[in-house]
Length: 267
Image 1 (spheres, rainbow, N blue to C red):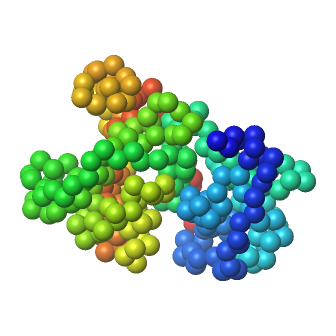
Image 2 (tube, rainbow, N blue to C red):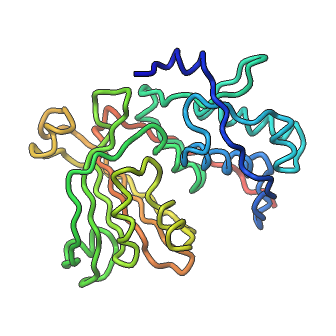
């Protein structure tokens, strides 16, 4: 088994993505944030795996056609998110997920949701097609009679013996084909929907509520029955408004923290 120390000693370089312009931003989003979003996505998808080095500042400047200041600010943000580490003379390396951060969720955009998937695997326990009855339709916001692929299991870090949460993911029947890829997928499921079906997730609604962990779930989460939990439900909508995916993660309360940054809108 390769240790984190070995990875640091033997950094690897990956085949670099082709030069590409940053996506247009109608909201006037800062250039460094756009660079961060692109690099985060590539880290999650394995373009830059743990132990590999990011391109040099000069190479990133050329790729994105931006200034060195923009690249340095983007790399600073990636270090803050604990996705990379930089050392003088050694470049910037993608680092392993730190289990001490498994309970910290910082969300300021849809792209930040990929951070939760870095370093976590989805240990699937069951997968089946179901038809929404009135109770389920009310729970996930769909219509009675709609068909959904429901995937259940634990989200687990390779570095921690404690599951991060119990997950129930509901995929609209139209996109149920992603099911065949989930057991070997490490990134966000909504990315699979976008890639396989040419769709775009335009909005994610998040709701956090308190609940009690039943005895049937407590053993797998390694907590006492009737412990307090925080249910995090995210509803992913396409540009058309259609619900493509609903993910419900049930976290033991002591393992979950949520942070949100609120900025003043300029204008």
